[in-house]
Amino acid sequence: MTGRDDRPDPTPESDAHFVERVRGGDESAFDLLVDRYESAVRRLAFGYLRDEQLAEDVAQEAFLQANEKLHTLADPAAFRSWLFMIAANRSRDELRRRARWVDTPELPEIALYPSQEEMPATRRAQSKELGKHLARLLSELPDKYRTALMMKELEELTYAEIAARLGIPMGTVQIRVHRARLRLRDQLAKLGIRRGVA
Image (cartoon, rainbow, N blue to C red; front, side, top):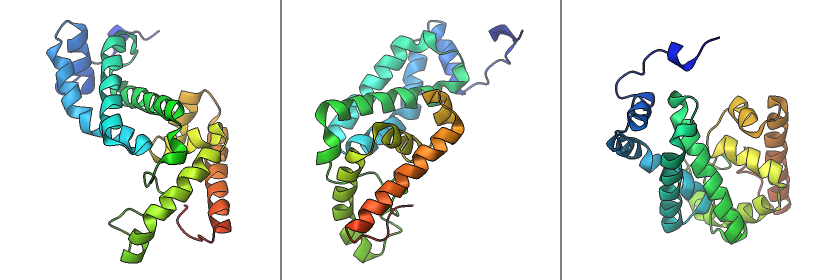
């Protein structure tokens, strides 16, 4: 059996290196991990919440939880995905508490429509209205479809990573994401919006 002691030593500046330093009592090493991922975690939270202050609060809570639970991380090299999972879970909890899916003025691009830079001027003018429709339609999706879609498009997880996190077969994840996209596209089409959903 291969144990933890058989793993290669983490390279300097790697996530695993800093995790091991924290576990060894060097609390300042966690600050380096915060510096490395603070912007990414805040962007992830903002993608869900569309509120800068809430995103900042959720990001801070995610780092606090990660610091407190660091001893439970089996593979130090997996720190990034583990941290993002914590941030995403806390963001979803915040959404459920505040029912922000319905009220969100616009949504993360999450490949449902092009980025602002890629949009022509007319599409940019329409994006806010599209975001309102998407917010409502996403709120109406079954939770299992919405969760899989957001993990895929916002967290940019692979199907295999989503399957592992949710504890379901990868084929089931693919079906849920596909059905979520189809439902959004069909509902937008009923509103006379023919483009914008992958």
